[in-house]
Image (cartoon, rainbow, N blue to C red; front, side, top):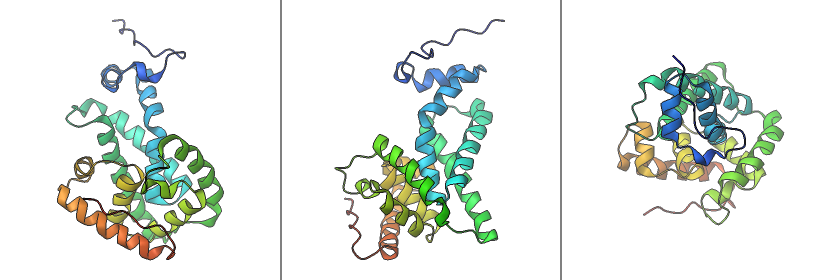
Length: 214
């Protein structure tokens, strides 16, 4: 049987013209082009979170690739009870947790040799996603400071890194973070406050302070 045509996925068509829900529906029917469009929409965002959580440019690339391989294979089980992005974040965070455990076994730490690659990618991503007027996320606009943040985050626990990455870098709501991590909103708030305090301790004393969320 001939598959139905996928609307609004021609090269000259902007990605905003087709909803995630429509793309997911067609991807479930086996249309790889529809899933390719979903990758285009979320790749950079997911890579940036992986970079913050792993502190390693190449590992972040591999984690992002594995994320989309796993999400493609698991797509038939996605029921839409949460946003597609929330579902992706959940898979990615678990993937990063697993990779960090392998880091620990092999005693791998953030490498200076990756700084130039990180700075190039960070410059592109900060222009696309970050609002310089935002006191929290504005801290990572400066590439060199972002390198320092990655180095500091590499010394933190997995849970603390995930809090900083999801809230202060990506700007997700407390409710969405709770859904991603499978915990209560109150737990998210307390872990985030501890993570921010810990990160400040690892950074120089002249680092700009984190705001206190109400």
